[in-house]
Image (cartoon, rainbow, N blue to C red; front, side, top):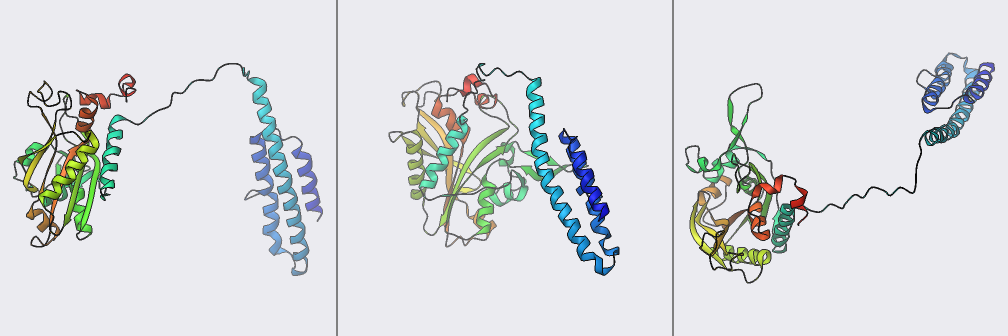
Length: 345
């Protein structure tokens, strides 16, 4: 008990000299730390005779509670003291105007991407996501693009190197489109299904109309008795929502390995209104996306019954649509972070 009274007196005396948070933390550790005076007293309780433990334990805990309360008050006092010291050293002129931080806004590509997603969600499509570092199987094989297919040459693929080796790992790629998300989505569940897959994609290409990284939105609808008419209806509604209800739309026969039949979708030139100009190459039309009915081999790859189910798929580049919507002629402007450009949107 004499030891406890001495600890109390020492604590009160020493606390008067604590004038910084560093000293406070050391002072607290001295009494309540893992090797502090109070902690050591509690550890030694077991060595006392059983008849003395109860009273000794009560006395130690009372002293501990006293120290904890005093430390709380001491911390507040020391914190206020340090603030006063800092204010004494610094001069603060409250009449000086604050720095103006202009409010930010959404990037034009993100604006259009969110608008695209909103249009398709309003038509009942859900949103799916997938990995940007993809396996060759999902990016090519399951989409009816085998290793010797010429369409691979059109993709300008980034292949991922094996760690610790100079060899190129041909089974791992940066996805060249968001179509792998369609494969993953079909493998996860059975028809009917209807979703879009927005996200970043990568191709080894760079000029005024191409960048190594860009954004795509692809869509898929699978069920019984899905026809090309459904595809046309969905895409026409989407285009009219994005570019206006008076925008002409046409479908041209085309080829994609993962759809059959396939089509390129054009809109009337938004600059010359179909009269012919440099942008539309005097045709009056601008290509905006590709689409088609899902190829039976894609359904076979995911285990769908090709006699029972049909479906359509489509894909579009978000930067391409943003350039058309805002009349931008160089895709690189999106990624140069020039505020003079970005503030226009």
